[in-house]
Length: 303
Image (tube, rainbow, N blue to C red):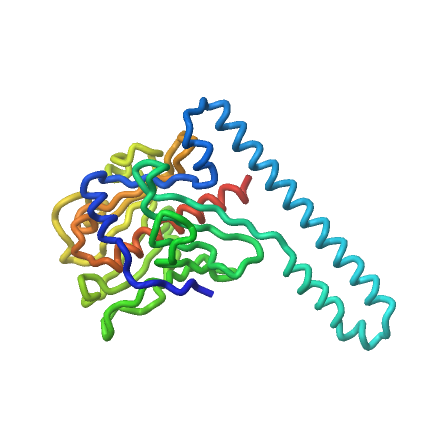
């Protein structure tokens, strides 16, 4: 279930900051305290190793508890009547309880120029939890009210973005925007359509495309990243362009070899001026970071 989003809170501040900063860094909030004091690289690496070891130990402990609980339930089920065994009631109950005690984890990413002065937080949840997989908060902590959220679809690469409400009657003001994955070998993209402008009055389509062009290079991170392309023919003429001549309105890439930064994000062209509207800016940020997290999960699962 998606988070209940609050009304618009401070996305204009993000534009104002980016008018000056141009690039917003995305930090790993798990180690914020460790980085608040000067520290050498060896100490930072040791802290990350300790954190990983603790998470692995917790996962293994919970896994063993669940397996033991299920085994005992199966043994009890075998000792009951054939009718009870056929119904599977006890086993299903055991599985439900096992799921209920399964461990859940959450991470917090921080958006800002410096890690100790963030202006937005992003919560990432996994395991058994009632929270959406990704929540963008309206303030610098994961306790700040939710601004937008992401939900995954089982057995699908599609993602659903729940955004703050648009003005009533807006043609592109649906509360949930679908981010569709498209693979047209050798390229891939994530596409969405939504209302843009101050009142979401114009319905436009956008695509996040994998890229290694000039727009990505300006972030000074990894050489390959993602650019958000505005597909409208009337898109602005200034700024970066895609290979098919479309305007690039946002970009992100992994931060490279940084110990503290996860990614770098920037608006460009009409995305930076604010003409596409507050709601579009929220969608650009959370969809870009959702793709970033999906890429991280894919790399982890592939070893």
